[in-house]
Image 1: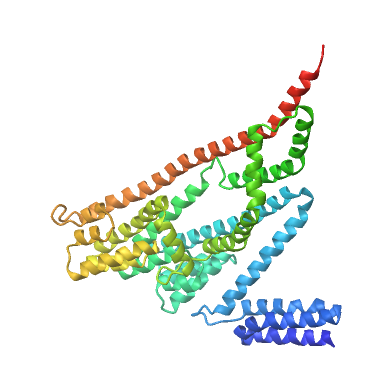
Image 2: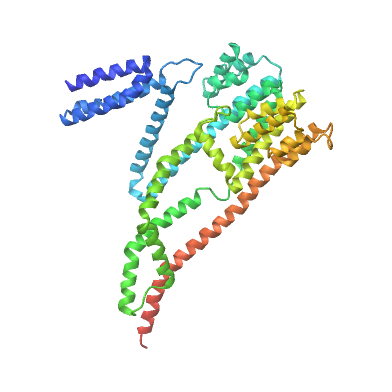
Length: 483
């Protein structure tokens, strides 16, 4: 009887997933859980096997159900995220099971394997965006009708790139603008790309914006292809390995050394070893629960949120709460503030130059720049500047009072640079772009040697503290040898 009920509910939720996805997504976990507890109490094993598939079938049906192309309804979105999370957990558990004979090393290797898959997914997304934008740019440079050019580029292929081009072409044929067609046909497109295209459409400078976007993508791709002397995960892996090695030594080896020294020479452990034991006692036992709780929160909250932020495109006009929090933190940290402001100025100066070159007024150019995918705290400065300009303040004074920087204010100073604003903006764009790249490389070249020095000193101290008791024992034994 329970098996029949489970099969009926399975069919019901497949139907609800297609017709009423919200109801299916919300109610399926509770129905599945209640039925599973009931059949487990009655020890009906056949129904226990079928019951979990009710929730899984509801998720899959909701995720693939048809929806209005002009909307992004939340049942489909959340069901996809739940399915992706379940898949990641299954892959991680399977990898841990495969590499379990290797112990801790196997678990770390499984985590690295999962991280590599996520990194590949992110890189693949960037490569797809570069292909789509380069195809659009090539079509526009050849003065071809864009829908026809995209259809020709996608014809004869059935890969992801071609499907994206066909979806964009479909929305262009229906009369939507290029930015809106990209949003609807390619929702995974990076936010800064769609924001720049939308801003360029308002000032009729789309070909120049596409060219600038392609140049930025090429620069990022070249930067990723550069050989890194040290992988960013190397210090983390080294610290984890060292912690587990110390845990075994401190639990099983050091007590034996302490006993041997007390019996043979009546002395205590060397000072370095005592300090290492005190540090380990403080970290592993006194506040181990707090460190374990923080590590668990990072694993269950911070890591999934960071992965989601890397995969999910930003919304420049209506930023997510996570994006607002991240922008606020990065804007108020000492070093990251410089990078955020410099990167924002690169995009803003570029669009200001394009807007003024197209004949827009300064307030219209600043209003277009507010729609770019830049730091939200920087956008507030742009809005303050726009308010001052619209009130009639001098442009240079408004820029300077809003905190946008003296170089940008100097470009709009009509007393000093009258008629040279465009050329100065072009120079500033090149300056900010090269300065951002220089600061990134400088921080990398300074940070990594410091990290390696700290790691080397830590490993050296640990090695000395571990082997010094053995040296004391050897010295005590050599004193007992009589010729």
